Length: 340
Image (tube, rainbow, N blue to C red; front, side, top):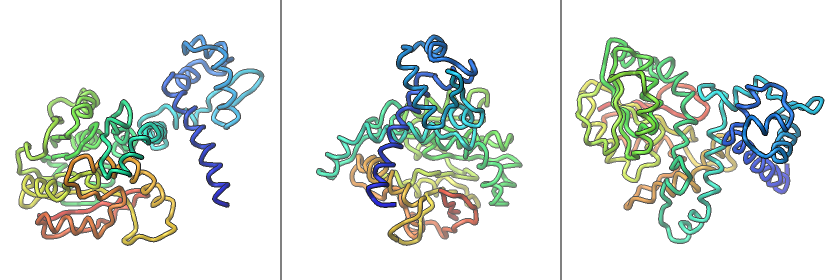
């Protein structure tokens, strides 16, 4: 495929994402799931939108093979409803669409940051404040964190099963903390993040789990130590001072405890052209992750593509005795065990 063809496809896909955003934002997919096969007038009445816009959106979605059109009625196939409406499904992709369009919103500020070398605050990326990754990662955490990833560390799994203390640094909207608490009923989890909006959402998400999961907004250094496990999940590359955060994690974990770091799956060295995963990580980096990390100065300015050698170097600089790449298979992430 030529570059011209690739750019034409990218334009089409971006425009189609905008229709997915409208469908989610206006409750159109949910209305179609409830109504079943519907006319534009029926959808408009249920969703509270203008009938003419309903018809145009429905026809676009049918042409794009998101909906099925038959005899003047439009329906949402069950397998597509899972992708669009089930936030716990591993196939759910709407948060990723929101994140991508949030980048478009912030591009004028990113353009100026390219010129000045400054950063772009998370708030520039829309109402979610750049924290849409929480919803995007939610299914992965709920399905895999306690069921597959932590059991890959047998000693950690045994301690969590028996009852342990976990600190979740940079917990965002809390789904990683919630997944650990659900998977290990005798374990307590303290989640902390600098963003108060994310923490408020985390507290709402954890309703029903009682006091085994707590969240607070603030610096990780305010947590009290001797944790059996400290998690730093997909946030180290966003930090202006990752070594300081890792030193904090080391001070808070028990002498025989473990710090678990999850970061992007990238090659050991820069290679071009890259595979689809590396392309995706770089696509996020210069327009979101790197600008956000440059708000605070001085900054390590790592970017999304944090290579294994960089993770190891950060761990050793922070004073850990060993950094081990774990044999956990995932398309997008790598997992590291930091030993105090």
